[in-house]
Amino acid sequence: NAGVTQTPKFQVLKTGQSMTLQCAQDMNHNSMYWYRQDPGMGLRLIYYSASEGTTDKGEVPNGYNVSRLNKREFSLRLESAAPSQTSVYFCASSERLRNLGTEAFFGQGTRLTVV
Amino acid sequence: GQQLNQSPQSMFIQEGEDVSMNCTSSSIFNTWLWYKQDPGEGPVLLIALYKAGELTSNGRLTAQFGITRKDSFLNISASIPSDVGIYFCAGLTASGNTPLVFGKGTRLSVIA
Image 1 (cartoon, rainbow over the protein chains, first blue to last red):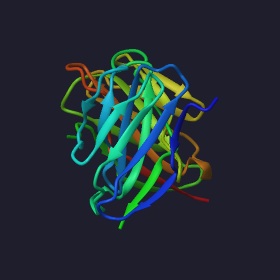
Image 2 (image 1 turned 90 degrees about the horizontal axis):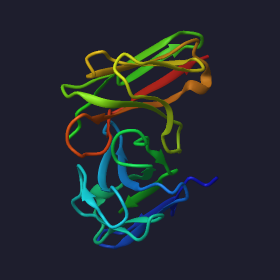
Image 3 (image 1 turned 120 degrees about the vertical axis):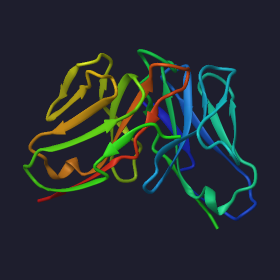
Image 4 (image 1 turned 90 degrees about the vertical axis):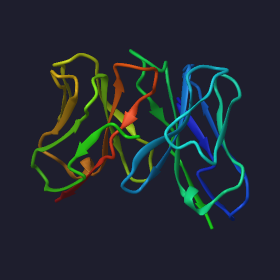
């Protein structure tokens, strides 16, 4: 039972480089999310996808783009990485966005450093 | 922005002590969730609450959904070293179509 799988686990980028963080879930969940975690800030929502074919901005979307490739996969792209994007990124999924089934299940995270 | 106020930010306790942490909001919530994050890992769901007044236990953990629907607390009884980690509350507001919001976490340290 893999649950939510994120790749890579660690990444170092130079300022201005681009990269895509991959996320896949095998629980047949409709909704998927990307969060970033910074010390003292908790988990802040970057983007989410309520269902296949839809994406919406969260609390901190600037500097990121997302693609809901299919029901299983939700990727996060940094087009031009900045040091302020140094963080731990978590992908999560849930059965649905609202009401029962909203409990989110998390991947193990991607630790990104931008130098 | 963040709508949940979680306290305390951090706690240092002796092994065997009981722990209590809480989350409050100015908004009404339909769902409260409590997560634990171990170092280097993603958050793991501990308890889910769906009804005002609901009291739910999971082993040594007990959580309650406040009657006003604006707060929730988590208690850990007889703490052990493996309770160390960051505990997050998360909630789903009653209005709108936005996903879960998270508190900033309570960092728990247990001294053996």
